[in-house]
Length: 302
Image (cartoon, rainbow, N blue to C red):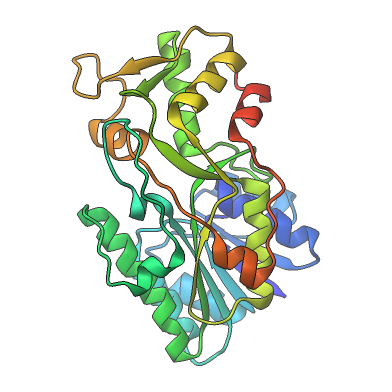
């Protein structure tokens, strides 16, 4: 199978691309950077230089491929519209990458007991934050493509950890915590750090993309998680890995703001608790990695 992967130089797209190659598939990868294109070619990925705004490139590659994995940007609606239109009537697979921040609750680092399953999309539920609503609308657009003879699926990942297998190596949220710790000499979390996020190792995530490409029914939404942990515990594991004191509580409203205020509250200070019921029951997915704190404590983060 020839699979067109957007975001092929990123953490998720790059690792998925390498997993597909290992399974015997051929991969064409979209990247914006000519230097990264050469590096992708060195990994065995056929590079295509372009952006998600290049509708002709996206449509052409989708028509040429046997399946498409969109792993570049969960919030780029025009790209999704282009891919759906190009694949309509073909029966080909379109696997779209979303993120579990769509169900994030709270902003202060306190724990929430609210846990979401895939049924939330069938309940008429609407996120409180407009950016999350826009992302969910894109997810629903992908799922509705099943009615246009596209074997569409949405993989809605929780916090991704582990080292990428391709060019992209680091998780955005973990990199933010580590970068702040290196700069300030102490690891910080928002508020009490009791807020919980489900998480998944990038290798387990890549396995699920392969399973979804092989056998996901059309129009199926999947949460993706292999466990969950508090930001306070993650910060503690980072401190141990870096040999730093901490972690310490931090108020996003304090004058010494070390992160973007919105990012601190709505990402680092929120809860995002999901359960990957369909991935396990429908596709037989069995994540092998269960502890983000064990990985962080043992990882070379310095």
